Length: 84
Image (cartoon, rainbow, N blue to C red; front, top):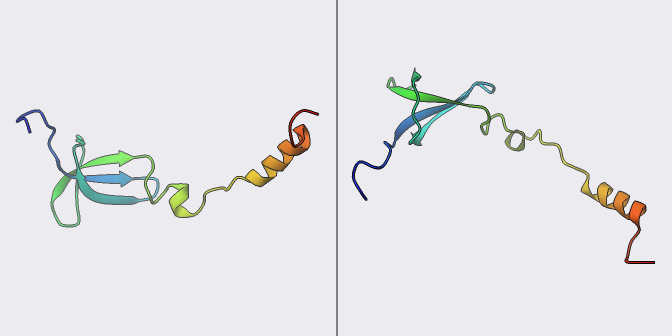
């Protein structure tokens, strides 16, 4: 790898304020804000809008579309098969 062209890769805390959830991982993202983590060290913190704690798919609150009903409605309206 070429020296001095890659961003710094280090520990970062990602925080989802809507769910009160945060996790420590490694990333190239940077932030002006910092937070003291459970281990006593201070890490940069990045606020995110959606995480696995607040996303409807992972929380089980996702709405399922009635695709079968839509297909039946289409068939009633436009009929099955080709030209009459």
